Length: 502
Image 1 (tube, rainbow, N blue to C red):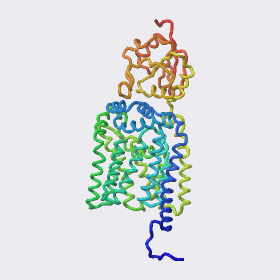
Image 2 (tube, rainbow, N blue to C red; image 1 turned 90 degrees about the horizontal axis):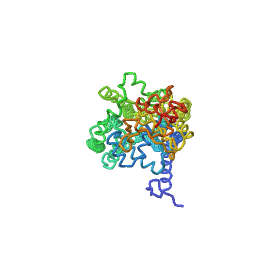
Image 3 (cartoon, rainbow, N blue to C red; image 1 turned 135 degrees about the vertical axis):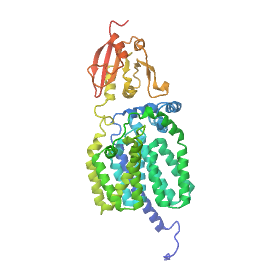
Image 4 (cartoon, one colour; image 1 turned 180 degrees about the horizontal axis):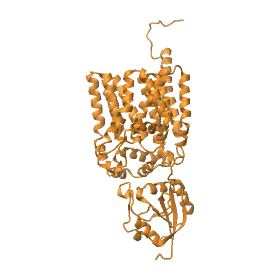
């Protein structure tokens, strides 16, 4: 039987090459497959049980508007969220507007982010570190929390870590315009989902400086890619800047302590934050350029946002800095791979982290997990109204807190249950805004309804507490309270017409 010479060149049909290629492919799939599966399982577990939060209700409201209405609205408010709203509009038009459907894009994006964390971690620190980084990322409670959020934070994380992966690929072949074009598109996606996340460019600049040194071709490619990626964002920047006073007026200027407290907020667990940061310290023994890149990517944006927030406008809110979690996970993965002598040790650390964060994972899946303690329980309020509903009923909401109450109750009420909003003058949709306008003379807006439901926030003894005085006076003149219910954080009252009504 003829044998191949050891020096004979291998063809594409060579079984040895096919076997080697198959092994590499299987290894690569395991690298990102395990983190992806872990992230998706944790993301899907009880994803629909927490009630929609205030911001999620806004996402639901915007997703139900037409493309033209969305574009008209973001010119007045939430301009930096326009891309997300358009994506969610397209998604819900196919999959519906259940809590699962609204949150599914975030769950999928977080799964994709876990894949990219593993892939970037392997490029920076090696295969075992990349796998550990991806699994650590999946176990972070904050990752699960925002995989359950119908807001763009998960998509921001995916765009940021994907941009890092595409930058590393471009640095491998700096003469390839297609690789730089891919990186530029990723940067555009980062800015479209959240402008503040563009502070990730600090880490990218440091990485290019360490890898390229005086290579003009690399610097030219990087500079052109950044310019091409950011130039499309100018209209979004202009809109966001003009709307800042209305959008984030409530964010307070940070203090020195906030630079420490921010980490437990990002992780949604003090124990997890401490564990990951300790593992990240061990990574100091790993490759210098990789450690510097991840450290700068994790810390520099936080420091810059903290410093800038001492000006006229504060941007220091932990959700805006969630995109730093992948870098921290990669550092921790490198530290775990460096310090652990075997796979068994790595598995033990991951199991211990799972146990440490079990209570945090459980708490964020409670019905009111997307609110601070105390509610409001919109679903319970909707059930109260549905159970006592009679044809011709109307409703009044306290809109002092903008549209949270009306959106929350409306979402959980059956779509075929019609209630006239008594004091509504012009809806947010008609105004191309997020807030409605109400009757200037409430008494004239009453139409002799026999029964009116009133929903206000809080559990004050007076069921009309919180309504504007003119609205409360108009109701008290013609109606009396017949029934009251006090679900968590809300008061739901049924008013019936008195004989004094003309």
